[in-house]
Length: 342
Image (tube, rainbow, N blue to C red; front, side, top):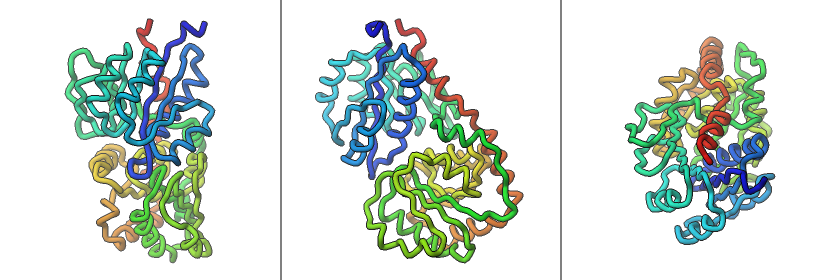
């Protein structure tokens, strides 16, 4: 029986400087396949720092952990021992040399492509975000474009299915910048928090799984209603209990939309700006302010304060967000993985 299973190799990369979004999506997909499809034999690999590796080793699905900068030769040796039928690669930009190796070792090569890049190698290109334009189709490739293919975890899907009331005045604010946060961004957000303490909001600040500062220096803010949350797997629950959000423009903006959380968005790295603008224009469920690294903090606090008191705007954003995503991406992607294999 085992010999008849389809071998799938899931490959991702993450870390403090790279972000955790690709790792979490790969883990979500792995958990889904592990639970739902017994005809699949999973082999998962992640490239990252020690904290990423420690996190992945705690998961129910086994992951092969590789140090950041792993050589192509080392990975090729690992692939030879697996002989996968399908390779799914989830990185921001995949080097062509690596794609050439992957092409050699599988029947079907699937690439997550959040930036809409033009990959010359690959069988299925998943472009899961709202983009101003998608890659020009090449012969022999299949393109899965748009948010029908945006992966949401089981917990986020559960939160998205719950009824949601929009309070007349927002009383709670979720702050989330993704799976990790560095000191530069953190210090900017602290300035924002100090500028909105007068609103007497409950502020849930999710720091993610990795950060590079001493949190004890900022515990004094807890007396003002700020709750710091580290390393949580319950992101959906925190979103569901928040009236609105202040968030980065990474994957988290789609999770907030699915749950119906009105949001003020910033970018924290260059490529997020274009993604945020497309999301806001087409989704109509959030407001984008700019790159927080260069942003006037007063402008940002004014935007948050305005949305706190704008019941109709928050209601409209919430409805639009929940209409945006149907939470069925995992099943669609699973079907494409196993189609025509053997």
